[in-house]
Length: 450
Image 1 (cartoon, one colour):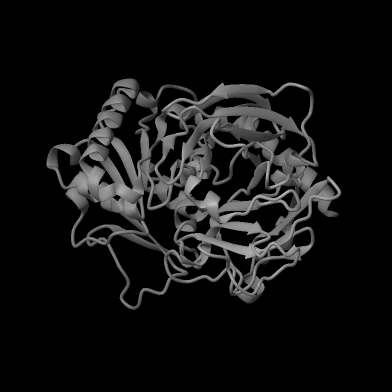
Image 2: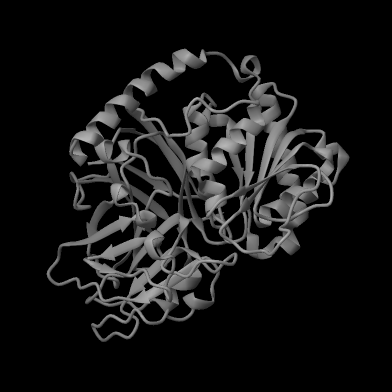
């Protein structure tokens, strides 16, 4: 069977599953199903985007989208704002209890979010509102936090020595060959989470296709996770080359202090450019996602204002950032990721090391660092070598002639999951280009997305 025919076959199989799964699960309220609402608390330099895929997996298994929520905060200032963050978590739990009629929520913390979550659970009154707690690759504990039943997920690709960390009295699971961020976003992690919450395996660990979608999210200053107040977002439908379709955007939003936008409606398989502009800057940001095939309410357009001065502005080259919430590997041999930009693979042991927490990166910044029209993949430009979860490379992506940039990915050496996104080669003096890759691979994506 050819690859194209296999993709069509898998797509048809998943379409039938998407149609009949609701019948298998039955319909009804959260109260009748016994489903607790979920709250995810992200880690350092994180956001709700680290729960984007998991949210879609939960909704693929019958969870209402409105009951899968995230708590976002300025991780760089947690020492000063922790009491405020805990109060906001109080408010969110109260809101969900009122909306769903459930007495308790299920809480998940990742990395620094485990410190926030364990601090919250140290109060008996607060712990009483939490039915289950998932501690994702973060703080260990000598006892169950707040006495709440706990699942602890640990990233198996990180060597912490023997014995490794644990939550004493909890269920401790090591996710083999997975990195720190991946431990929050992976399919294997979802299976553990779902089984812990519901007492049985999910009907599917895949993200099921939907024909009519809703897309919403936030535009934020990063890492503060505050809304990009005063910014403007235009959502453009784009073709296979990333070129805009039509003369008017699909939707347009004035961004306020909360950063919220949407929801807007879409059909399965469509691609969009999310174009963010600010009055105080002539350089816009254009975000390109892989084709959407399931409703997504955790789109995060994070604007890292502090990094802008380190990326030159020029008419001659494109400044490209590629983001994936599963760390890139360039030092694992056959398991290496391929990230080829116009045919040049930028993954190597220097640009994409693995190992300790923060060493492996989920965002790659690519630009002509030396302004010489040449590539140099032997070092990481300043300051990206010193920033956790970020990396970069000196790569010349020409803007003459105007056209497209080919972004080809082979995730962890899986040639069957190879895919290519084309985006415009915009001038870095006018726009920064961000490509958001899915942190999952599944066969139906190719059939629905191309």
